[in-house]
Amino acid sequence: MKKSLLGLLVFGFLLSTLAFAQPTLNMKQDQMGSSEKKEKMPKAQNIKGKISDDGKSFTADKDGKSWNIVNPDAVKGHEGHHVVLNAHVYADKGEVHVMSVKMMADKKEKKDKM
Image (cartoon, rainbow, N blue to C red; front, side, top):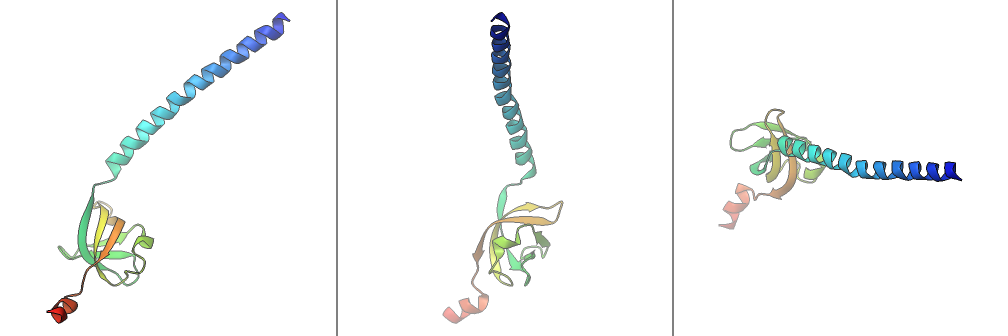
């Protein structure tokens, strides 16, 4: 009887210790992950330019620089069009991660309307 009571007591102690330690570990991992994400992900910005015909790159109007699109599915249907991207720009990698796309009216269309 004493052995089973002692075993039950030890088992309960081990379970409570594991339960207490688990949230602490998760909290540390969450804190590390969120700080790494903040450092790695630049602020999103709007950029005017043209998406390539294959939808894998983007050329900015301002400086003519070409960027690889990290998530080409986000620009599907806008291939070859003049657009405004809201994107995270990774200058060191020459890449953009597109958050949203807005079509821009062609200059021809604007002239026709006047």
